[in-house]
Length: 504
Image (cartoon, rainbow, N blue to C red; front, side):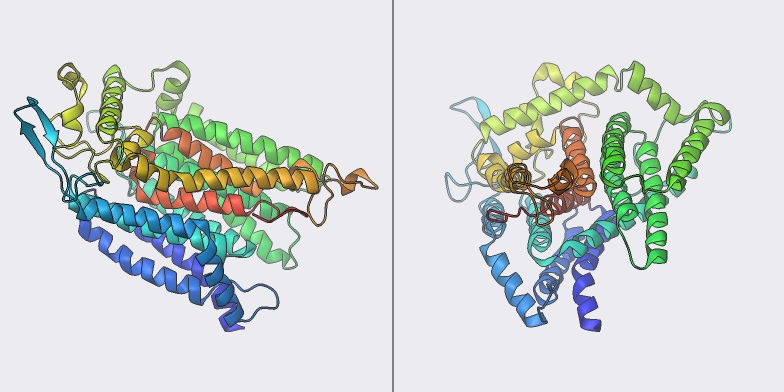
């Protein structure tokens, strides 16, 4: 019994340890020593995934290990991950390239790598980061798809939400110690950091994704029938508290974009779950939850508009509705950085310049035009992010790296849509599809049988963070990358299996 429980919890627990490590270290772009422990975490995680997988009904430990090992070997994600890691290694060992002045062309150009025509990086030390992150992300994706069952996936999301809740409490505690006014009564500028995040937009995206996940977990716990009712009650209370902490943390990052996207995301999920409650549960939900939400909203409204009308949240909401969210200088600087990234990509379209090499001395300064430097704040400092994660990813990895790095997730998204279509057509084991014959309407598959609220909430959180990444550097934090991948994979694997057709 002990080994069975260990096998059920060890993989989600190990992923939670990795998330906690990334949350509290947040290594800088030039600090390679902070990434070295990730190699040991990755090794331990691989051992846990292959030696302690979640066993299905009727399986012993050896059968489960054999099944997971075969599944990992045949998973397309495994092959693509190996190719991407090989691409990153080629970038690292074939570099570095240098910026040299070519007299014949009368311009500065990059030199070739050791093997001409093959991808090479501009800085080997910085490019090593991608190797560590790629291994961790690949192992997380393989574990979610092959080693975790339904309960394991739910447990994993719950653990990541717990890590986010602790990080949010720490951030709110640190924020409360920052005075709003100095001794002269002058309002201090809003802080640019929150908790362990170096950028408030990255923090806003992180707590936004975890708020959506907590919302989905909360409603799933509220509608499921649990034999141990008192444990379910405590789980609901914890998830409700986690939802409140993550939402408040996302607000107190003071990122106007995060606040606006959070409001839209929560409204979409709330509307979806409300219809689910009315249609699918026949009014069995307790009114105590609605009362708690209304009381909490009333208290928050009183504090925001009456007790403390002059506060930073009020300033952010005014900017959201009246604008502008950013000053003209910030807008122009973002445009200049994004344009520099696309020009860098145009010159290095095949192999890219290497991970994190956008901001080094030989990176983006070459692609900022003379009349654009006036919009770059602190031109002598290093600018690591351009504000558009897609543009920076394309510039750093080129077409080959982007195909290997992004196509797996595009492929999984397409497969998820195909699976949803098959569920709608053929139904599940309990429900009949739209084209099947049914004696009653209750036997037919409905929208909530096709996409339950839990994966829907994860999809909304992932989509929201992706939309933000086109305007702010969301994935400059490796913790955001890990959480995004885990939530995306959990959402795609949580879609019900169709009654007919090959399971995807």
